[in-house]
Image (tube, rainbow, N blue to C red; front, side, top):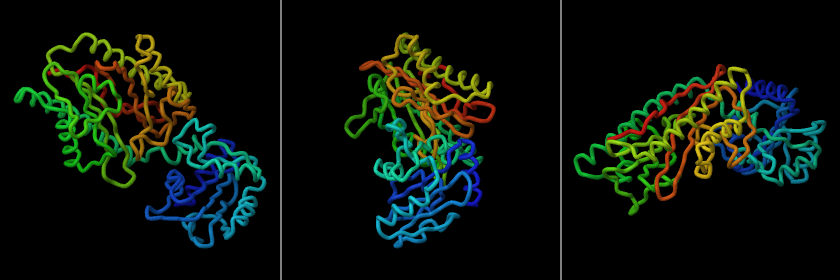
Length: 393
């Protein structure tokens, strides 16, 4: 099984014209390396190790004498060091003849999701001859591309999240009808109980934000600070979850509603603009994949952001267009981002991302519309039904 992994890595290295991929570990500093190299979950290593996969030839291992079996689950020739001087000497021998190696490194920390190797280790490798290049695009193939099983898991959760968000708004409307009001925490609790019923997990509670609170993209109600929701209020709900299974992946959506019969004109105007920007992101992906020209993540962001800019709300769109989805809700693959980072990674088949433009007007309201897009060889597949109008009471 791991031999097939090495063959796949070597094929990607050859296609990328990179002589080798150097994995490095110390404690748990690089979870990407641990997952790609299929370390058992219970693995705990306390000494530095290196694993070189060359584009051609047999891999090389470098491990400490205290932990000689650290890489026994992987193919390759093993070297053992004891002293720090031996580590440098044997690492130099392993790297001999290689002009460059990929590592979990991003030049000037341009893509922090990839920056897992410390500066000192990069300096060490560079001092031994090879130039260190980023493994950012390699990572996507081995860490971020979903298996058929993960795709199926995601589809089930995506469908369920859409049902739950609609149920949550029904809960809001019914509480107002029966009692005159509810509050953010009650709605949040309703959603979490639905997750428990489905045996889903999430890394943090959903966002439930009313009126001015929705203008804070990462707002969370807290004990003693849960705003009332009554008639004539605007509500934003952002929820994400995954199945409680090994290697399961997330779905993540945002919907909005108004607890009245008619959405206020300004809210409606902003919602239509956000929806137009969201849909432009999908259109752009369709256009580029139809021409067999997958874009970079920053290009998707630019297309979506331009719609918000043309609508006059550029300064109120304060986050990237979308993030990668994976085992973490914010995965390690390409983001649709030319704001927080300049993401030059390619949007490749097999990955999934959110598209979630937003406009946030301080002390008034914030509108975000979030969908999930799975990239296939033929183009984007929207896995979460887009919200086409603000829900109304």
